[in-house]
Structure formats: structure tokens, C-alpha cells
Image (cartoon, rainbow, N blue to C red):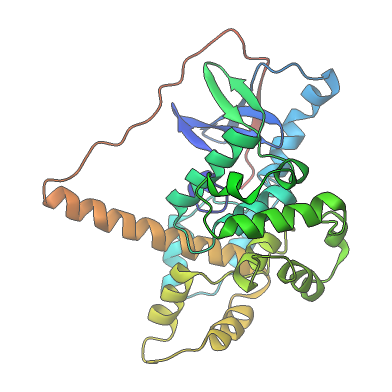
Length: 311
């Protein structure tokens, strides 16, 4: 559920799990009860890196976040309770900062399926290829690789007007003028201000990056899904609710783990809409069976580990 919840866009369903990358590590992940089974691709790695794999995966999936306590901090209302029950076990991923920033710059005015297509196009054109069994995955390109591209190159990855913003931001990051790692020490207010100074970054994208890359768990991104949920469920009698009012409400009502609450509301609303469409298509005779890649076992897997998933 975590990998399909709209916070990260490159993981693909494969067999009973997912394939993708954490930084430059190609991985196949499969959840088995209270264990996360991790298969690392065949790319040679230093022994110390292989030993560090469980910690890398646990950090990425924030397995140290106390989900029971976080969920208990949510408001006790019917909408939030339904989302909490539906999204049980969903975690906020700790994403690499540049990858998260670049992906959300590409996300402006796009649906999740389109963002996934753009992310894959960028990885295939500018990223390094890795193997997981018989399947290829691609590392997200570093800022200096994007910075050497042209705007036309990026437009060919279906970015449209976003190409100019991604290129300009990549050059700022690549030159060192914007040190994303050092920004970790900033307050929420100053971090948001720094992010919003970058080309293509407004309040919504800044809050996404704060939540998913900087672990600012109070950040509450408001996109069209969340705006609709807030207006319909929390302000049903108001004909007009301003963006400022929604922002003030979300900052106070959802509390210190507002980012988690937002992700649960977002994913629940999105999945409810998808189920509604599928039901309608099925009733109309237009339903189509979902397709899932078949995972092939090979002898090229370099490492397999099982990691407890804390609740």
C-alpha cells in the first residue's frame, strides 16, 4: 500500500511484490506477514554495503515510526477514522531529497499515472540501468546529469512546460548554490521559503518535499484530492472556502502528524474513486482484468534479507 499511495512513483508491481530502487540499489520487495522480504539485484557491491542493506531499507520505509501512536494522534471523526482503517500500515517514506524534489516539480497539474510515466522516461533516458532478476530498473538521474541536458531533451520525456523548471532547479542544485542536504537544519518556515524560491515550486510541492524528503511530519500538502475532501467533508455547508482557510484549518485540526493524516485521507479518497469507476465499468461490461508482471526466480540475486515491519 505504501508504494502505491502517491508519494513515490517509480516502484512497479512484480509478482506478489514490487521492484524498484532505493538510491542506486535495485530491489525486489515482498511483504510476507510481519516480514518485508528484500532481494537485491546482481550489481556487485562492497561487503559493507550488503551488510547495511537491512538498515537502508528500514530507514527508507521509516520502520522506526511508531504507527500506533501516530494514528492515535489523528482527529476522532468519521472521515479520518475511515481513512485510518483503510490505510492501516501505510508509512511516510524517507525519499532522497533531489529525487523527491525533481519528481514533484514534474508532478505539477498531473495525475499519478502521468507522473509515473514521466519518472520512468527520465530514468530510462538519463539514469543508469540495473538488473533485478530478468527485469531492468533505472536509477533516478543525479542533478548534475539533468543539468547537462537541454530543455528539449527534457520535453521529450513529456514534461512540457515543467522541463524549464526542472532544468533550472537541477542547475542550481548541481552548482551547489542550493544545498538540499544542509537545508535539513532549517526550521519548517525557513525550509518552506527556500523550497518555494526554486523554479517550479509552490506551496503544495514544497509541502510534499518537506513531508516526503525532509520528514517534516506536520507538513500538509493540499492538492485537488485533499481540497475536495476538506471542502466536502469538513466544510459541507460552506459554498466558498478559501485556500488560506483550508491551510489554517489543516495546520491546527490535524496536529503534529498532519502529514500522515493527509496521506491517509489522500490515498483513501483516491482508492474510493478508483473502486467507484471500476464498479461502474463492470456494470457497463467494460471491466478488464488487471495485469501483473510474473516474477521469475534466477540465480543472479546477490542478497536476500527479511526485515521485521514494526507496527
